[in-house]
Structures are given as structure tokens and as C-alpha cells.
Length: 217
Image (cartoon, rainbow, N blue to C red):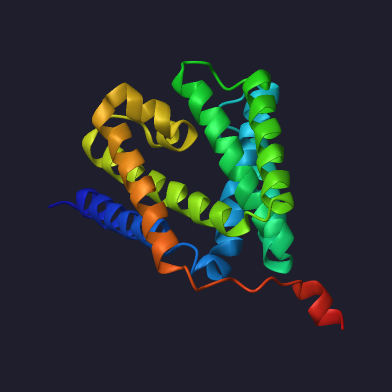
């Protein structure tokens, strides 16, 4: 076994374990995962924004990396400081991922229109989660979907010819291109993760916080 194959197997094992942990116990670990979740969604969202508005490839230019990094950093800090922002980002990421994932799965390239639909649905999800007091359900659903995405990405990276950039940019479209079994795998893991988390966290609630106010009081 050469070094590159070994490194690939190790990376796949780590990603798979992280995805399963996130999918099945993401709500209980959400306070620990907040900065990580916020950063990586911000990185992807910033890069998507540059891609949609200027036609650049996903994380293909220095500008997209810089914008993505600073958006991710801002999301990570705000998520850590404010519970309301953390929930809004989790809900917004869910709405954005559903909209852009579905439209790109249909074969529509990520352009301004797809980006606007994604942002619009993300805002609707964020406001709805806060107004309707659905914070717990949103966090469980978001972590289960992201965890299932990591599991799906691991299988695609190991057993398909899809490029890593394509897997990160349009995971559902990449799965659909390879075969329906991968989409079924994603839906199974996400659905099972949501169910398990709902059952195992019935008596557990994350305490809401405002760390900035606590630090200055």
C-alpha cells in the first residue's frame, strides 16, 4: 500500500466517523461544533456567492478563498457569541442547501438566480425557526443532513470518479450523476439521524446564551 492510498483511507475514515457523529449526536455536541459549523458554512457560502455573482469556479480563485474565509470567520465568531445567531445560521444553511441542492440536482448551474433563491429560502428558514421556536428541530435536522452529506461524500470519493471540488460544490448532483443508490444512502442516513436525535434528546435542551453580554456584565 503506497502513501497516497493510505492517506486516502485515513482521511475517508476520519470523515466517515465525523459524519456519523454529527448525524446521530449533533444536537448534544452543537455547542462544541458551533464555530466549526459556522466557519465551514460561511466558507462555502462566501465562495458560492463569488461563483454566482462573478462566474468564478467554486474556490477556484484567491478572491473566493479570501471572501469565504472571512465570511466563515464572521459566522464562527457570531455563532460562538450568540445563540440566536447560531440557530439562524443553522436554519439558514438548511434552507440554502435545500434550495441550491435541489436546483443544481435538476441541472441548473449555480448562477445569480439559484443563489438568490437559496438566500431567500435561507432567510425564510432562519426567521421561521426563531419565530416559531423550532430551534431544536432545526439544529437536529441541520446536523443530521450535514453528517449524512459527509458520509455520502466519503463513499463518492472512494468509489466514484467525481472530483473533490464537485463533491463539495454540488454533492447531491454528484450523487445523482453516479447513481440513485447514493441518493438513497444520503436520505437514509439523514432520516435515521434525525429520528435517533429526536428520541435520544427528548429531555435535553441546549441552554440559550449571549456570551458577549455575559463577558461584559
